[in-house]
Amino acid sequence: MPTSPSEPQESFDLAVIGAGPAGLAAAVTAAELGLRCALLDAGPRPGGQYYRHPAPGLKAAHPEKLHHGWGIFTGLSARLKRQTDLGRLTYLTEHQVWTAETGEGWRLHATTGPGGSGGTAVVPAAAVLLATGAYERQLPFPGWTLPGVVTAGGAQAMLKAGLVLPGKRIVVAGSGPLLLAAASSLVSAGASVPAVVEATDYLGYARGVTTLAANPAKLVEGAEHGAKLLRHGVRLRRSSAVVQAHGTDRVTGVTIAKLDRQWRPVPGTERYLACDAVAIGHGLVPQIELATELGAETVELGDGTVGLRVDAELRTSLPGLWAAGETCGVGGADLAVAEGELAARVIAGREVPGGLRARQRRRRAFAGLMAAAHRPGPGWPEWLTPETDVCRCEEVSVAKIREAVDDLGAGDARTVKLLTRAGMGWCQGRMCGAAVACLAGGGAPRADSRPLAGPVRLGDLAAVPADDPTY
Image 1 (cartoon, rainbow, N blue to C red):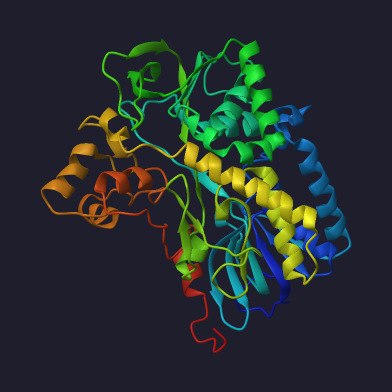
Image 2: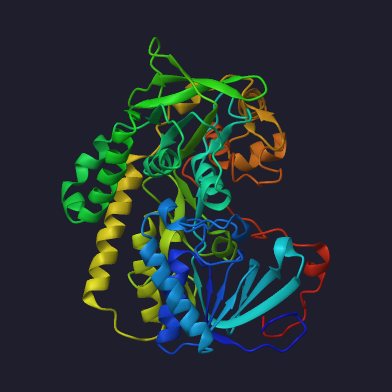
């Protein structure tokens, strides 16, 4: 097993980064097809963010009740155990890949152990499949820094991993299918959800009747969430947004308002909802820094985010690098599993069954329709005030960003960052990046590009050989 940059290491046929639905499916399929495969993941257990588990000490009796499609995960987990027991697959837990090198093959550099406490490892492989998933997109609003305001995914994470709720009366807001799933989980766990506040009107789905008809499972999934929310008296407020959170020590309520087609608040439509928590999110952003840093080509997606450009075989523009699942555009676990298996079969040189290709195409078409339906409108900054903090880490307000743009001539997010420190804090712009880019203007969205895809100590950086003639 790789342990140190200075030690000779075995080279794998394929290294899969990420043990979520796409990575799990890819790794077990590749191993079953005879490839010597390594599966690297930053977490201690498989499943990624989607199949997040309760901590073992909590002794959850029925974790499956917090998940949709748990049977798919248990099936993949059983195949993972079988292949690792047979020695065909090396599963490297708590391996955070922070950079990759490419030459005659690939070398993945990772920190190991909890928080990188275990040192470093270098994993060589002939090919790499990127299945790193996505993270949440947030649009700020006055009061969003109050305790009790969490992301929609964060609320689910608290529930799935810690078996706790962020509050007792929780408003779920933002845009995208994650809202319905989050609200469904919260009411199942005993929370009161007075409303799901969705910024879109759902009419975007009407443009894809054929795509909807080709994905009946997605319609059933949506209907199941809807029926559960109806039984719990949860009201769905379309074309609306939380435009302010109220409170001092923590959130005590929110103001919601109707939005026009451009997501501008409609004056006179405001109403107050009492709550002690807000779970909010505006979709997901593909996590592709490892690939973009190496120069992989990207493509703007229907929701305004940026994903990796891949061909029908899921090859990126970089030789030997494949991508699957959310890195190519957010589409859910079903699509991720299909693409993981498809990519593994291509890498192994095996035929891809027609049914698998058809399923992947249907799910990818639905992902495109979903993305377009929930693309943020350009008018959302109108619910901001000058005092609203956009960058929470560096406490950079709307006024400071507008000063950088209007008075100092900043025309893009990077220049705003240099002038205000927006995006230079702990999260490195993952929370505020989309909002800063929008407020800065500057044209089409750009992919995040960071020299390091994760935290790494200076000593570990210094240990990377600089004179290896192969790379």
